[in-house]
Length: 273
Ligand code: AMP
Image (tube, rainbow, N blue to C red; front, side, top):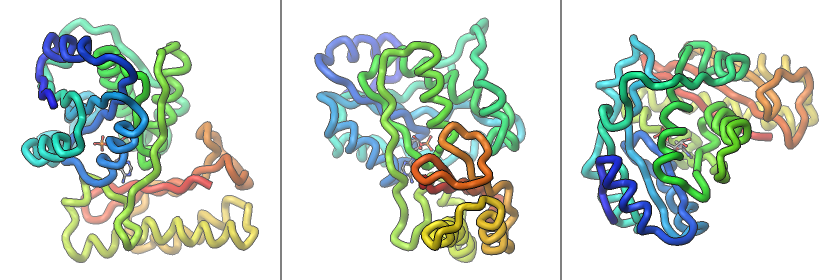
């Protein structure tokens, strides 16, 4: 595995790769969710590139970028053991220059849900992901369904900017008790860890409603909100796969999304039905 930090090093290492290349962009503090993306890429491509970059442009001014968990040594070991070809770990000055043209995510889809409480977040995500795609020139790039809105906006960017790569959505990896893995889970203490289970529990309750034949969105959202009543809920939404509102669930074309704060930690989860 080559660990590269600069653009010329990455470009040189990329040129040496023949055949299909899978790319997994991350912000590090790797867990089994990230590893599942890496494994899928390794299975489906001749080579895999992973990036670790805590991207400042996707954090808002008040969000504490410096406190985002960082574990570079452990991350390097995980990538090495997995058998990837290139690990790209740039610093901020490598990725950003003054006088850059701006890229804005479509506001009707980027300023709702996550983007409502984090305005501009997805502009920063698309900006860095486009740069990373240009650098790594992947055949396929792997993104978790956990960040469903991000996945949608990246798929939309690839389609509308005619980028020549395939986006591969990957299933959400959970703890045995249902909690979706997240780098942010390390912020939770023992009690908060228990409270955090309410997110996946609310999704299970929604599934039960749907399996019992329920299709109306509002009563299902009400059930979920009552499950989550002890938390500070930011949103509970049931939308179609294009992130448009629905009054009635369409099986095979709907996503149930939840975001709640446990203490000061914002957690998200979702279910594709
Ligand atoms: P992050 O490091 O949080 O930016 O995540 C990097 C990639 O890993 C994104 O595509 C995420 O959607 C994905 N990811 C994060 N958590 C999970 C999870 N629990 N299951 C599957 N994918 C995940």
